[in-house]
Length: 165
Image (cartoon, rainbow, N blue to C red; front, side, top):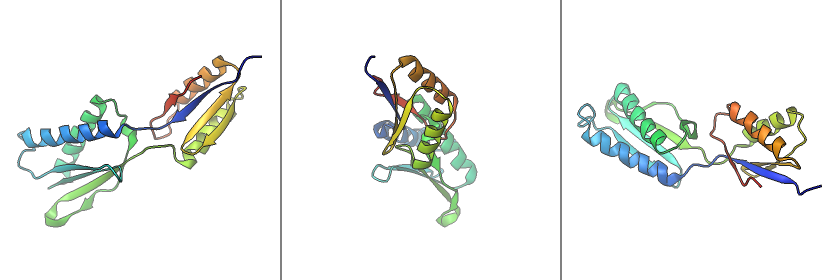
C-alpha cells in the first residue's frame, strides 16, 4: 500500500493585495467626478486587518464600497474575505463602516467543514490544526472528490486548498 496523501484547507488573504486595492480606491475617489470633493476616505489598518470607509452620506458610502469591491475582485481577492460591520453615524452627519479581513478558518466553520467531509462517507480522515483543516486519504481520487464537494459549498469565507501531496 502506498503512502497516505493529504491536503490542507485554508483561508488566507494576501494583505499586500488588499493594501494595493485600498490605495487604488483612494486614487479613484480623488479622481472620479462624482466622488471627488465628497470627503469620502478609505484606510487600511494592517495590524488589525481592518478596512475603514467614511463618507458624507449612505449613498456615497455604497459607491465607495462598490469601488473597493471592484478593485479587490480585480486583484483576485474574494469578497467573502471581508466581514463588514454595521454602518455607524460619525461626526458632522457623515457615516462610517469597518470591514475585518478574515484570515484563517474560525473554529465553528472548521468543525462544520470537518462534519461535512465525514458525512460524505469517503475513506478520508479529517484533522483540525489551528486555523486550517487537513484531510488525509490513501487515494488521491477520494481527496479530489472531497475538494470538489467543498468547492460547491458556501461557508461564508473563501477556501483555498494547499499542500496537496
